[in-house]
Length: 452
Image (cartoon, rainbow, N blue to C red; front, side, top):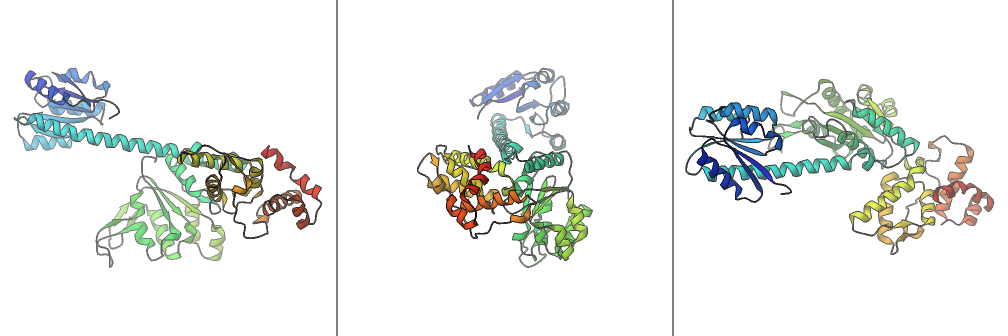
């Protein structure tokens, strides 16, 4: 244990008091202090005891009253009631009021108390570990740690995410594959007031249409062949927390009807049951499709579209986040080196130029993969351009016209793309594009300011 486990013994009988204090103190992890009255122990609750053993028959206060006062002061304190009388009704009443256990004084009382405290201590360690893991997860998905970049597009995303934290509005995240939609959903959840409740992610595209209903809503034992026991659906698993429906645009129309009803009624009915189960979970959806276009094509219900629209967050593709590319590349390099016990690398000027010249059709996910591979492939502390391996399947600039730009900006993007294709051979780029080599140099000046 990282710190002492503090135990209070409240017992007016001097012999019993010393017996319990001595027995518990034999464990070096336990710090034990004895009290002879309820008033004495109530004055020292602020010291944070983990366990208090209470004699039910104290002269200044009955055990049930002291139990209530302890729980009012700190519900996390576990209370063991010790009594001379074996009354079932009293024991049941005390356990309902929050007592951890009810023990009857006997020749075995020392061992019974010690066993009970040991059990509490073990659970206490598990709770501490769970709390530590939760804190670690929340730190991992803090805005600062989970989302990297300061480009205008990402600043807008941060603003919308912050607006989502103060309420439970449905959030719809759109963006190309690899832009980090699930990361945004997790960051919203783990920074919201639902952070201590479950985050349940469902990839709709990965579930066959005939199974989507049982996956989301659950089923009763015997509802269909193979249903050998009751199973909760994802809505029930996410109760109190967040349900993230990724690739919602892939859901078939039949399932869309049932999803709409659940969202409207805030209750699910398991397959094979007629009893609705109330659910309370925040909904975050994501898609790489244009859902409004899908509505026009008849592939997505219009009423469900407006039910899910909520607060829309559009993630920009990496090719439109030029200011963030090198920041992200360095972040992934440092992270990978740290996780694998490697000395941190640096990118050469040529490598940085190559990174900025590429259009990143796979977005942030592709960048992370390529950087990690480069760290593995290099034998030096500096990552060179030859260590960066891109999968370019076409000599056409991907998605050139997806963003309105000036002719000059289009020209620079084309030159940058061909620089990546031609290993930064300006003469070859000039030949392929039918322009002068000096024109290529001139168009690359903007890049030089970013990599210098």
